[in-house]
Image (cartoon, rainbow, N blue to C red):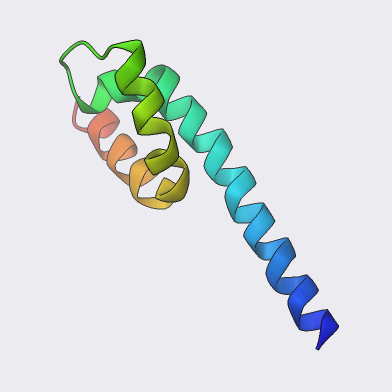
Length: 69
């Protein structure tokens, strides 16, 4: 049972780490690619938790917006 809990904790930690990397990159660079309007610092701070949690969706939308240009 401890091995299962350890595995789940490691997978969750890797998901959060990947989410932080993708979220910070998206908030720093990609948000203006997805939304052409200017984005304030406060809006970027508010976007970071959502981008971190939903990073697979954020990356797919970001890549689609880059390909459509």
